[in-house]
Length: 96
Length: 300
Image (cartoon, rainbow over all chains, first blue to last red):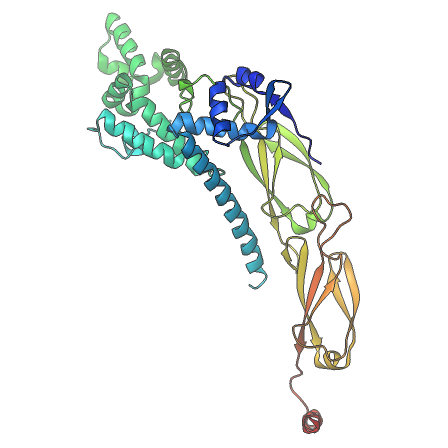
């Protein structure tokens, strides 16, 4: 079973120099999940790549939070379709 | 270093206004942004070019130099410096340009340029202070299908670094594994990126494959199909004897359980081997055979 690791939001913002308001907005839009424990807020380590990606898209391309949400959904859909295409291509080879 | 036509990169001509540059940059940045084109190295290169073009053309001072000196724009300040020095030494300007490396070499110009502009460009990274994980790197590792039957250790060279890798049995074609911390250096002190290795599995066997299952066809004679019998089939672990039931139809499929490929990260679990029977009808029949087949057909 995969072990879950949580990182304190305050600590992550300090190290990454990403403003906590950005993370709060992501949370408001349901793009990341916060875990609260004893008045401290944590993020899942697995979400960090996604947070950084959304931060780059927000700052580099000026994409707002609604746009980030749409992009996230579409990228997930593209990945799913690519996997499906890959599987079907392999299956097609059985009949060649 | 090859000259890059930054106007061409942004699809503009030299008369483009600041607003045109901004508009073209935004459009192309959205199109080629690495986060929107994962695993597309061509898009990543294009994005870098677009960024570089924007860095130069959106800055009036840099754009002026670029327009004035064209392909030598990076050395513009060095030329200016050289011109001043050489004028004071009594050389004429033409000699300075044609004398090449006598007084200056390209590497000095480059250092000089970098010291003036504070180093190279960084994909827009200078606009923000956030620390980021370094760039993730992608590599492809080619293996034969027979190589994935057992876990194996391999050493791969990544630039000047050697990485020892244990490849688990049953790794699939197109599957990607992540090696943490073996990617590019972090940005502004951020952690290193990761290395993603995608496996390309070449099927060097007679079998067709779908995930951990293998497929093959086996010719059997008409008589074996009708009367049943014993045949020998090849598997990846050697030959196997198989009983054919009487009255077996063409295209009948039989499953040899556990004779497929090992399942990824599931110890001692294997896929299956499916054999499809193809009945081979006899040819060049003798008169006696023809007569016997006629007799048989009359019985039906």
